[in-house]
Each structure stands twice: as structure tokens, then as C-alpha cells.
Length: 162
Image (cartoon, rainbow, N blue to C red; front, side, top):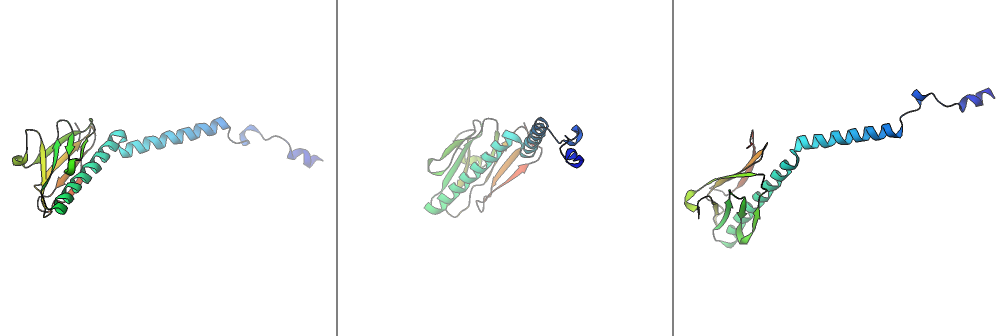
């Protein structure tokens, strides 16, 4: 009888485990820590916009090169660094996020107007060459187009910022 009474005795408070409130607090702290870690490693919203813009411009530069090869006629990729607008082959166009600053370096003789950058792609796969730099507050990226091969490559810019 005495053994049965011991089994049903309530445990002391220190051995009872965590309460629901304590468990929710721990889960909330873990979620906040994970969100901060993701933002720190990924650059937050600006980093996402930068990576998205780099992917888009790379794809459109490669598309313009492909169109020059396929159709056997020179094609142009145009960019207006002042307002972040770009135009690729076959009327494709787009707008870069306003937060990003754009710099262009390329052949001056191809510019249709002051401030407009042009990279020409030729039927043999070559290009006029050029560089497009996308700069955010804390990060930057440059896209290079090789003039002999027309190959599009990119790399991050260390210490970039406005």
C-alpha cells in the first residue's frame, strides 16, 4: 500500500519539466536567431535584389549573344545606368531596383547617346566587350563581357558600397 502511494505523489516543481510558456519562448528565440543569421549571411533584402538583378542581366546578355549567333546578325544590349533600364535582343527590356547604382564601361563609339551603354554581340560569338557594375550600400557585383569570346562572367566586388 505504501508503494502505491509513492507512485502517485506529484513531483517537485524542479523535476516537472518546462511549461508551455517556457517552450514557446525558446522556440521564438531560435526563430529570431535563425532569421538574423540568414539576413547576415545573405545581405537581407538588398542582397536578394542584387543577386536577382545579376542573374537577370547575365541571362539577358547571354540571350542577346545567342540571338546574334542564331540569326547571323549583330545584336545589341543597351543599358542606361542613370535610370537602371536595360534592353536586350528582340525588344526584351527591364528595370533594375532603384536601390542599386549602375556603372557601365564599354566601347564609347557604340553609344547612341551620352550616358547609354551598349555591348554589341556578333554572329561569330564575339562581342564589343564591356563591364556592368551593380552597387548596393554594402555589396556589389560586376558582370564582364569578353570581347573575343562574348563570354559573360561575374564576380562580387569587395568593399563595394555607395
